[in-house]
Image (cartoon, rainbow, N blue to C red; front, top):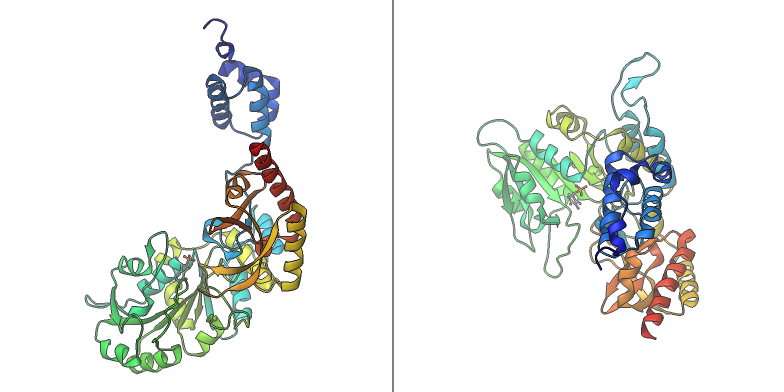
Length: 443
Ligand SMILES: *Cc1c(COP(=O)(O)O)cnc(C)c1O
């Protein structure tokens, strides 16, 4: 009978808002958010998803367990270091601390000695120049794409026909989610003059294409794919001689952010080498192999960097204090999670994986980690994973802690390379919960 339907006795919003336990639990939550949570719980009760008696406890538990942001911390068990969908580089403890400290008022643009206005980002810039002595000057902007946008815009030159950027056909890349660097550059009004072919480009291809409208030579690191077989490309030093001959700026977009060569990734280009080979500007992302916050780092010759810094667009692309703090701390820090995952002790990783497999009653398989979209395409990082049935992946993702595993060939693979060792037990417990539910289902 409708009258006796307990759902009719769901408490009204004003009644719930006035309850002392709701007020206490919602102390740090604004009124609009509290109302949304109340309404969600009322709807759940109306739909019979929770009993009416649970309405108040559900609201108070939702309010008190609610985190300030809707972003859910994730354990990355994919073995992919720079995972764009998971926020790329996790910050080091020092960088995290720097962000917390910079969250309040800070002297980002004030000289505390004189009380006068000072330049933003001097600390981060000094750290960059210390890390990269081959650079005369540096500028930090919002991300790698912003750095490229600013570089091609500021170096476009004047005159109606100017603004032709020379780039090899083998370096026209899409960086993900449908974003193409080529489109980014043409939105500035510049034109791309493609030279060479997909697999082979020679210095003569660039030389023949240079004309009165050429504004810059651009070399882009193919960060997320590899062309194999009959291939050739022109290195930075050769492009430098050509650039000098025609008095043109040479921009090198490296994508990921190695300061110096890393023996673990022998084919991955680095800033120091590119600058020494003669690049006027080198562009890298802060949150790829560098292991820092999202940022676009521009390093190079003073004149070129200053041309960018003075362009009006630089103001629209500038970084905030939190990024500057995290970046400086990352550069100064001895290590960070990306560096550690790349140089992980293989034997230790194997032992951790075996311990986990034993704890959850699963098997260990060989599994290659990857750098990810940030660089070193196709380079395997040999390691191991715990093998679980494929249908474990979803409950692990939705659990607490949320664990993102690699789903591959009908299996759910747990790779501990990018999981902090202190979280191994939480991973084991989460897998236990998921697999015990599975057993229950089968009964
Ligand atoms: C990743 C990448 C970019 C874009 O950098 P974001 O920091 O993601 O904006 C540009 N160029 C190359 C070669 C890249 O690999």
